[in-house]
Length: 264
Image (cartoon, one colour):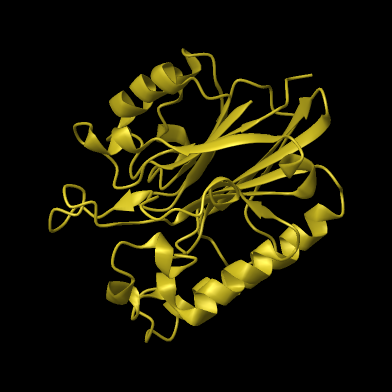
């Protein structure tokens, strides 16, 4: 079963790229971030025509997450618990039936957190990550296959940036950010890309500015974390880098895993 995360950076602006990629890559489950549209305006017909079920948690103009799945949804949950005042659309969970039992897949779009001296944005990022850690700890008690897939806005290590020194003042690479990510991992998750390679040059984001793509000046901020039950079925991981060279690309590319699971 192929599960992919992709920050699409505006689904309506890139629906042509999305449908082309869905046909080319043939994923079973796709987690999208930054769909930047309300649910009612999500281009669901074009995606459903390719055989996908669609669930969204949208927001006008920014944020927004979605899950596209060839499997039927058994359950859908929207919004990260823990703060009733948080109205950002950053979290959607789908539950599916497989031959190995329940599979939970979450599409996540973590706060950026910049600038770090803002008295709201960086604290909000860290607070959101703490809420995610508490939620994940609770979900792990179910002992089910769980995949947390998304744009984490976290550069985990220096190797995950072409020029790590350029990110020292950025929220994505702050010690507190990286520590929060490690705490999440230390609950028992496997980080898919690093489980397969410790190489550099494995980036998932290239800025639109200053020829970053042409210079391969990238960072790795899109991650898939696997619960022990999902990690036991883990077969491979890859970054579909070529998509960044398409016309009107997102600044992120799809990151994919294969799990040895089949629909029930």
